[in-house]
Length: 117
Length: 109
Image 1 (cartoon, rainbow over the protein chains, first blue to last red):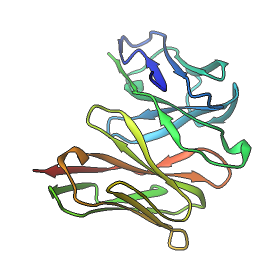
Image 2: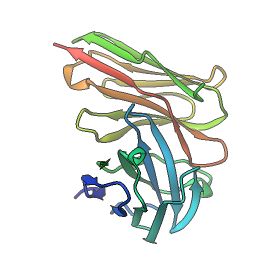
Image 3: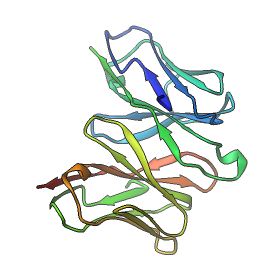
Image 4: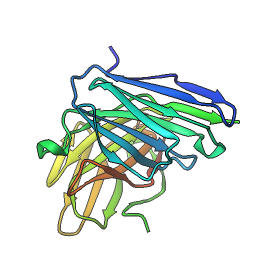
C-alpha cells in the first residue's frame, strides 16, 4: 500500500488550461504539504495544511488553489497554466505539524511531472 | 544567498569510499532533515535531527547547532547510493522546510 500517492504521475497540457493534481495519504497524518521542484531540481514549499486548515501559504500565484476535503487528501488546482508552471510537484505528509510543538519526519509522494506547452 | 548551502554540488566516488556531504544554514532551526532523491524521482527522508548524531546502516548524520552545520556520511559506498542528497531545515516558528540545492552523488563500481 502506497503511503502517499499522487495522480497523475505525468501531466502534459496546453497554456491557459486548468488542471488538478490529487494527493492522498493513508498514514493517518494530520499535516500535508505541496512542494514544487523546478528544472534545476530546487525544492520549495508552496502550501501546508494541518487537519484541513491552511497553515502555510508561500508567495504562490492565486492561480494555484489547494483544497483539502479531509485530512487524508490535499489536492492542488491550477488555473490558466503558464509555461513557468512546468515542474515536478511533490505532495508530502507528516504526523503532526508545528502546532503540536514538535516536528516530524515528512513522507513524500512520487511526484507529478507537469509540462505546459 | 540561499539560507541552506550544500557542498559539494557534485561528487563522484569509487565504490567502497567514505563520502561526506556538508550542509550549512544561516537561520534558526528546530530540526534538520537529510533527504535522498533517486534517479526515478522519488524522495525519501533519511534523517531528521536537532542535535548530536544519528546512524542508520551505512549512513551517519551529525549536526553542530552552534556552528550551524551538518554532515551526512556514507561508509563503504555502493553504486546504489548514487542519488541526489538534499539538506533541509525546519524553521524555528513553523513546519516549513527550506531546502538546499542538493548534492549529486555518483558512485562508480
